[in-house]
Amino acid sequence: MHELGITQNIVAIATEHAHGAKVRRLSLEIGQLTAIMPEAIQFCFDVCAQGTPLEGAQLEIIQRPGRGQCRECGHQIALEQPFGVCDCGSTHLDIIQGEELTIKELETETLCA
Amino acid sequence: MCVTCGCSDGAQLTYTRPAKPVADTEPHSHTHVLADGTVITHSHDRAAASEGHPSHPHAHSADDPQNGHSVTTGAKVSARSAAAHAHGTTLTLEQNLLAKNDLIAAQNRGWFKGRNMTALNLVSSPGAGKTTLLVRTITDLRAELPIAVIEGDQETANDAERIAATGCPTIQVNTGTGCHLEAAMVDRALEELSPPENSLVLIENVGNLVCPALFDLGENAKVAMLSVTEGEDKPIKYPHMFRASQVMVLTKIDLLPYVNFDVQQCLDYAYQVNPHLQVFQVSATTGEGLDAWYDWLKSTVKWPGAVDTAC
Image (tube, rainbow over all chains, first blue to last red; front, side, top):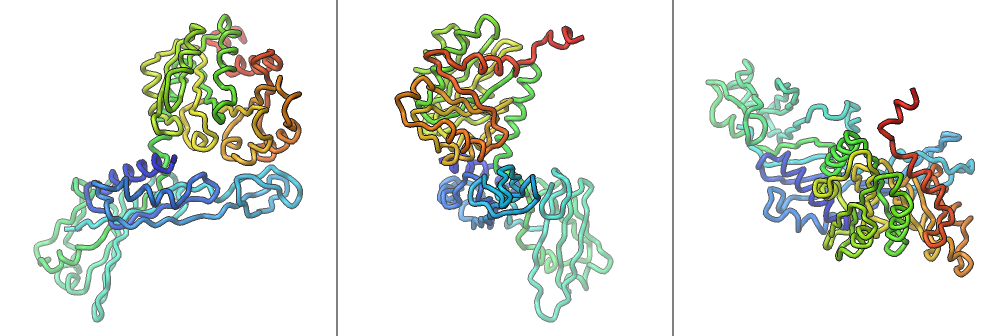
């Protein structure tokens, strides 16, 4: 249940940036090679958002598939887990996509005037 | 680097304000750059534009506590154009979800460095033998190396009591329902423990091969422990942990004759997940393999006099 701690972080960061305004929508980017379950974040979000400017906000989660690049031959392969074997036989892979854990955007109901 | 535009980290926030253009109006969109570098792009409908905008009579300032910016309307702009500002504000954050933890971890790292301490984050599943190896290590090395221990468990101070029995400064952190230690817990524990300068701080994480991989505590290295009474496929079952670790210690090797554990297969799996892993095979009971482990521990500590002797 590390998703609970992470969701608390999400709510804290978003609350800080909202400066008291009510948040309508929050979008996150979560790579599929991180040990984070989007469903669990969604579940924890409703609980953590209670009593904060994020209560009732729409949570969007963008999932990024894993990709690795071989250090030996430079070939790129799709990864389902954070390791793999390149077609050339090498296991020296750099993960180039799938480890994202980011708050992308925050939409608030702020009045400009 | 920001993935949206390729700018560097910590760069400006972008405020994008989508306005719904009404038919028969020409939306007028423009961008302001505030003194603090904040970029604001927004649009007005033609009515507002015809009344006040050709001469551009409004200014944004960054001193509004509500939303970080405000609009000062010009004399000719009516309430109608002010109403056109009532729309949502989208903030592009691109902020790491673990940023708060990582910041405190960075503070811890500075704290350790300033006191010439080395910190190791010991992770494994419950029962892999972390505490037993620690007790043996402290007993064997205490004459050569000052060691302090932070013990993480959900409940009980049993492990801290075992360590404290060796005479080593110890503090127990009980996480309650938490399944891992976080940087803030280590920060608080260090305050209470105040380990001596130039010491080796061993942080025994909560027994868990999943969550501790994500949370940086400010350590110099993560050390994953795996006992031969577990499956040899643990490195590929819990790849995040073995990938995040710099060192793997295979424990309880004195039990190898009695268990069905293929060491070579285990190492193959471990190197597949992390080709740079450094591996030690030890038995805290018989002492086999401990010398190599101790040599490595000692090599991680930067002695205060080391520079002088080198000169």
